[in-house]
Length: 147
Image (tube, rainbow, N blue to C red; front, top):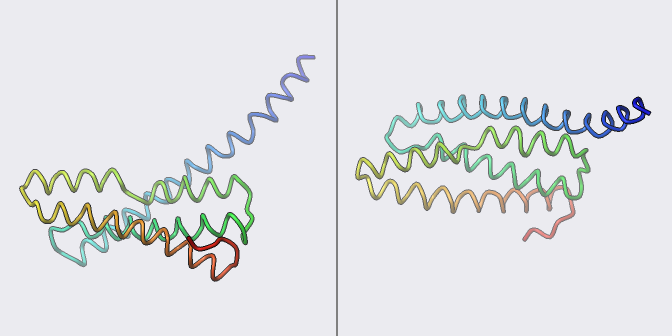
């Protein structure tokens, strides 16, 4: 009887551990990508505006929209892979907390226009990128209505 209980626990526990590990390692990969891409873009820009974070957030939104659309129809993938990519990699890659910190720094420096532009551009381009990714996947892969 004890073995039967342990067996049921193992069957219940193994998928959770797999998902947690995929999120954990995916977030590490996403964080490294954010560091490299955001840093490279910011270094190339050489300005005070947080363009590296903006590029990372918008590109992450584009990929999120594309994969979310693809995973609901044409690319049927295991839940673990979907979670590992969307929550893990893209969760580690996109940088909403960094966006908040950089926007607060602009406000504290009384750079009202830059702070307002960062808020507006990040949100508008982020939403537009999620929509564009969704539409692109719908058109390229079929499925989804593109709205």
